[in-house]
Image 1 (tube, rainbow, N blue to C red):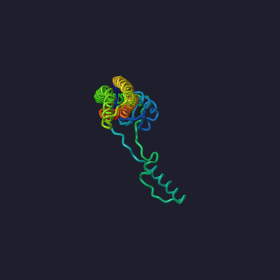
Image 2 (cartoon, helix red, strand yellow; image 1 turned 120 degrees about the vertical axis):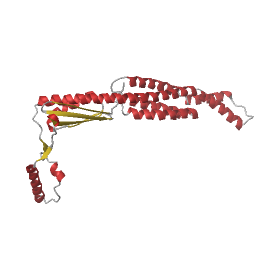
Image 3 (cartoon, one colour; image 1 turned 90 degrees about the vertical axis):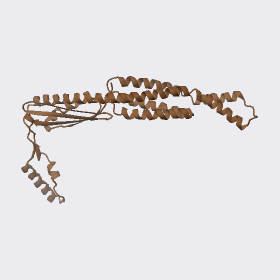
Image 4 (cartoon, helix red, strand yellow; image 1 turned 135 degrees about the vertical axis):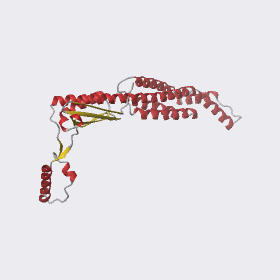
Length: 292
């Protein structure tokens, strides 16, 4: 079954030293884009975290937030270093005077400097941090996958219903298409009779014109390809793995076939059927954008 690219998951793991919480939010994206916001102490694990997230979620905009708390639920609060902040202010003042620059030293500028604001985190062994962070990550990823599967099932149901509507419209096109040359022939004869009631027409020439018209408005190939595309679409919809791009490609191909049928049809009924099919296909296209 297909999976959505929209999901959310949160999990935590810890020891006597500290607890790590991992929160993951995913949205639709053409590729796999992983963004990680974590304490500086976890920088060494970012490569592993990124790979595990990409392997598990495959595709989407993946935002990972990792926070650290002291054991027992104690919060780790930030503090500012007065000496460091004061020294930065002195340096900025010296630079301003020597370089003859004007401008105020803002709070934001000072706060952005390294070590002005920091947190006192427990000194935890690397092995312990890695074990806890990756454990929390696995739990959060599992929660995201569960939500994505649920969302994917809802997407699949909606798309399947719209595919059934398009399939029914294509059947009506199949039934209508052979009638178009016959109806056009009757209309042609009627126009000619009204134009010159007593004039004799060459049956062979009329047959040639009807044959030419029938060839020009023949949509049998397009209808056959639509049937093939619908079958492939259903197969992908029921399968596993990342099928979003393939489904998007098939949606584009079906759009081309429907547009061709509409342009070649030269028939009001076929035109109405293609308009209805394009409406359903556009809704499928919107849904497919969120399929992994």
